[in-house]
Length: 299
Picture 1 (cartoon, helix red, strand yellow):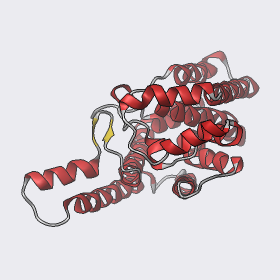
Picture 2: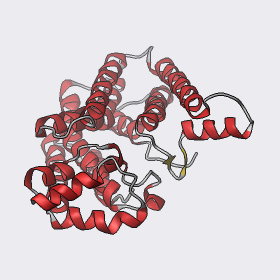
Picture 3: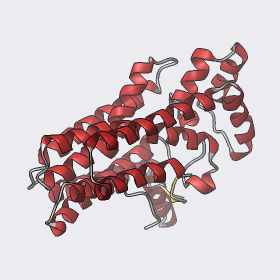
């Protein structure tokens, strides 16, 4: 109830209406399943990332553990809080399946699950590595964000509306670059935005040893001193008071400029996909508006 973008059901809805969908009630039921699935993913993701807050409130496993402590329960309460949160996520997953299973978009939903799970496995794996190839980073962003957040939800919406192959191909041509921009932007916000604005734990990528295009730039193109400084920040409990030091490193190294230029390039590619689709002005406008919305977001 504390907010959130609800971007996946919105992407499905946007494509559903662009493709001429008429059965809005059934579409809403299916697209609600996408948000339930995402809630499941967030609950599990927060456990994997040791996340403490989301949208300004405690993450599920932290909240449950504190409630157990308040009730003077016994046992390893932090571990049991995580156990209950995992089960809660599983329940949300079951609800998502119930919403989507009896539809013709089921196969696309299964593909989406496969891709986001593999993307998350890559995400976890790269945290164990001192270095990672650019191609692995690109695969992670494509599977975990671009496909999961944009391409597959759009294809689910298009399929629900009975769209043809051309419309489904647009989902990929538009959704892939927009998703890549969205993920790089997320990684930038993790560095640049205070937790009071983002609603998430500060510096979660650096805290967990995550590789991003920004850390990758320093590791491959930074000076010896910049590389040393970055390594000193990785896997450490950085606080808000450390933000000027972190920002200085990523700015002076050129990593910020490099990443934000990539973002702008992806936005341009998404805009070109709209032009190539030859939509009517009315069809094109929501997709153009979405690019502008994502460009302007600050959390």
